[in-house]
Structures are given as C-alpha cells and as structure tokens.
Length: 110
Image (cartoon, rainbow, N blue to C red; front, side, top):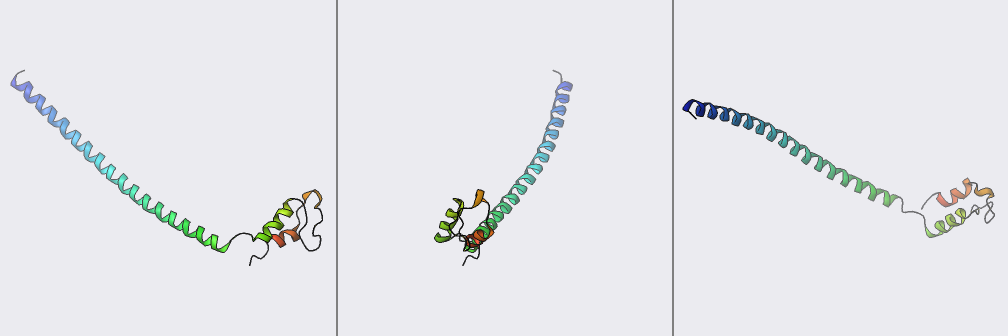
C-alpha cells in the first residue's frame, strides 16, 4: 500500500466515523425522548391507579351491599317466589319480574 492509498483509506474511515457519530447522536436523542415519555406515562399510570383506588373505596363505602335479610329475600325471589307485601310467598308465573319485589329487595338501603 502506498502513502496515497493509506491516506485515502484513513480519510474514508474518518468520514465513516463521523457519520456513525451523527447517527449515534440521533439515536441518543430519540432514546432520551422515549425514556422521558415512558417516565411521564408511568407517573400518569400511577396517578390513574391511585384515582381508581380512591373511587373504588368511595363506592365501597357508599354501597355496602345487601343486608343478610335482603340477601335472603333475593334468594327467594331468584327461586321464583314473590317477596313483596301484596303477593308474598306465591309463585311468580314463568319467573316474570316483579317491580314490587325488586323494590323490597333493592329499594332504599339504609
């Protein structure tokens, strides 16, 4: 290899190194943006989880569910019997819904 070929080869390698450096700079910049976005999304996700937990706790305090006696009435109703005052104990025809029974079971929960 003569001196000219060595110099040209070194010049070409330098240009390739500069191109690689520019590409690495762009990749680093994009990676930084991705990491920042990921951190933002993790924080937002954590805030949403906390908010969801607050709402679930609030709902569980507001709606404790049916009392034991209402659960028993609900069981009788599901088995096909009326639990309302007018027709208590009689069979519901074809298990048709009864708004009065549902009022007794799911009405005011105090």
